[in-house]
Image 1: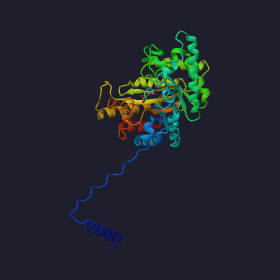
Image 2 (image 1 turned 120 degrees about the vertical axis):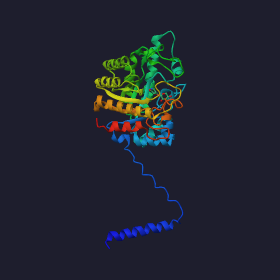
Image 3 (image 1 turned 30 degrees about the vertical axis):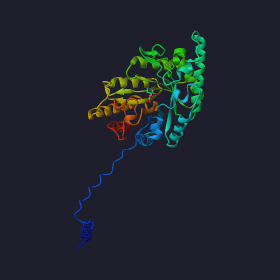
Image 4 (image 1 turned 60 degrees about the vertical axis):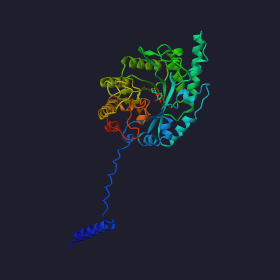
Length: 381
Ligand code: XIL
């Protein structure tokens, strides 16, 4: 007999022996499932940094989202932990413990950090800063707020010097009503809340010049950004912001880039998305998609069933936006893409099941949107 035939006989005999050994009468165990085919991590296919926002809980204590952050992303923004009212308490004292722990963990995992945020009206110790004001004396207030801003930026940007890749120096300085005007206490909701302080109420258009100058002094190597929302939605707001960046630069301060938050939804106008990237690219500055999330609850219902059709529409929009970024913003100007969170139920838009804007389910499974992001990044544009 040929060698192969002998081998067959041997194999059959072994199988028969195994069957006998199994005791007989038992049911055959089900075949084990095929091994999961792992996709490449997002960061490994991208030509620019791919980031997610992570809170202390998501990054430091939740094993699922922490593993995802470390696997798929090479950069992150702290969702709240570098904001004024996290670092500064109601009496003006600074505490960096939480942010420092996250910086150490990010560095250990080779994750770069984008600093967020230095001058913003929200999540800021408004009551503390207002306690220094003199109601009848705008000149006094101008000088006082300038000095509070300077100390705040120098202390916070100075503390993280060399540890962040860039900073959102100014955030959301433009109002939506009317779109493109500079914020003041009248056009800003809850301007007098404890945690709101509208810097531009007191400093007007000088705010940007001052904030960017103080930030550049405190951390000369960090890339400095102005960041805002609705830029894909309102041409008036986008044009105002771009003109303001030119004004700040014309007055001698350094602005390296513009962050477009992109808290959008599945119906956001695609031409408007393309046009806003084109206008941002035409500035010649860096462009950061800084807080991307894509809502599916377009009617603002209190709760929502996340259907297959919605999941598909969401994936399509993730793909469209990232592809548009890559088509319209030259490689050298792509600072990166930041998705605003990890698991759907960690999103600031989740609100107990009202929306599912991210690319992983609450259990940490990849959604269709994940594959859409991966494919867009892989496109080689
Ligand atoms: C949000 C966080 O995601 C929430 O956890 C927090 O309660 C409120 O702020 N624009 C910004 C971000 O610049 O800092 C905001 O983040 C979302 C809107």
